[in-house]
Length: 140
Ligand SMILES: [Zn+2]
Image (tube, rainbow, N blue to C red; front, side, top):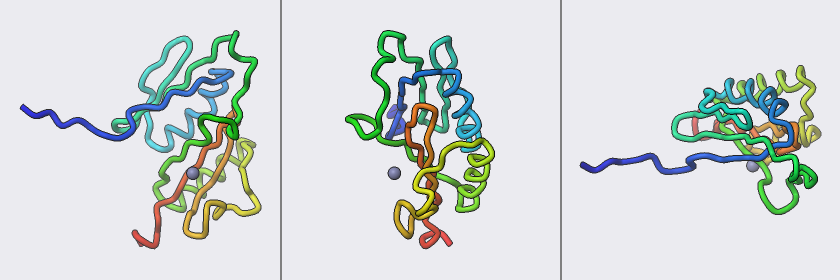
């Protein structure tokens, strides 16, 4: 028997400064994208979509003194697929309602290039999040 597994990204794990804040921020967004809560424990939570999950873990107190900077070595941003340009717009409306800072607002929604319809925003640790619409020139 040949078992064919999924290939691609299995999971991403990110340490955060305040897990409760992270959960309340990410839960609506990930749910909107179709992710479901996958694992939940005192110091962490994950959400899964198909074969990929994203995990947030509370950083231990003794390591909290060095904050996250996306311009330093390490993770710069996480990018997600949106269902459509309308979906990106819906998320933008919710972000504005929630008072979430939207990045590059002057160049929005083409900050990533003229064929790249996306929104960029920041999570509570200022991790940059990107939501990208499908290429409508390929899939009209
Ligand atoms: Zn990107």
